[in-house]
Image (cartoon, rainbow, N blue to C red; front, top):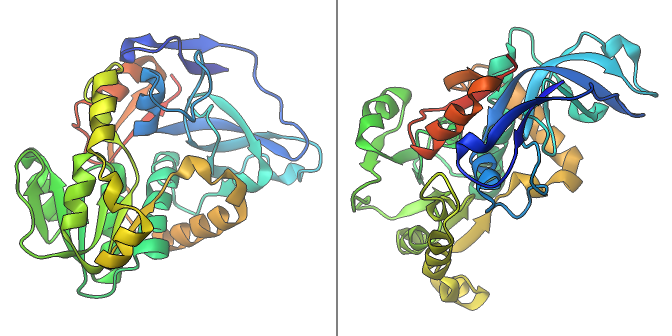
Length: 333
C-alpha cells in the first residue's frame, strides 16, 4: 500500500509517499482499491497543525475515496468484490487501499467514473446539509456563496439552481467568467469591498472572522448565515498563530448569542462533516439522494486537476493559492 503522510507540521513539502503492508478488512469491513481521493481544505489545515480534529502527526489524512472493492471481512457478502464504490472515511483516504465499514462503501451509479465519484462526498454533502437541511432557499430567494469557485461553492450552485434561488458568487476576478458560464446569476470580487445591494436570505461562508460579521449585517430578517470553515486563519502554506488569533478576535462573538439572534431575527448555523460520524445512517441517506440527483442530471461535479500521489505537494499548493475551480483529486501513481 502507498500512502501520503504528513511527516511533520509545515508547508506542502512535508508530504511524503510511503509504502506499508496492505490493510486487511476486519469483520463488517470492505477494502477499497483507491482510484481517486479528494483533497479538501481541512487536509491543508491538518498539515499545518491547525486542524484540531486531525490525528496526531505523522498521519495520513483524506476524507473521501472512490475505487473498487477487492476484499471483504467476515460477515460481508463476497459478491461485493469487484463492486465500484465511493466512500467517506475518517482520515486515511490518501492511500492506495482503504478499509471502511461495508455500509459506508456505496455502489457508484452506472456510468459514474472514479474521479467524478471522488469529487462528490465531502463537497456535495456539505452543500446538501447547508441548503437542503438548513438554508432551504425557495424560488427567488437570494443566496450568497463565498469561495464560489471551489468544490463546495460549485456544489452549492447546483443545488441553488435546482431550488430556483437567485445566486451571488464571491471569487477573484479571474474566475468570474467561469462562474457566470457555470450559472451564477451575479459575481462579486472577493478581493474588494464589493457586496450585494440587496439583503440575502442565505449566506454560505467558509472564511470566518470579520467575514461572518459582514454576513450577519447582510442578512434580511429570517436570513441564515451558515459557517463551514475558517479559511481566513490559513493565510500561508505554514501555520501562523498570528493569523489564527487575529481571525478569532474578529469573530462577532457578542452577536451570535441567542438573545442577539432573537432580536435580529437571524440565524447562525454551522457545518462540519468531520463531526457527523455518529450520524452515519442520516449521512448515507443524504448521499443516496445526491447520487439520485446526479443520475437525474441535476448535479455536475467539476474537477480542476487530478494529480498523482507523487505530486501531492502541488495539489495542496493549488488550494493554498486559491487557484482551483472545482475539485482537486489525487490518484495513486
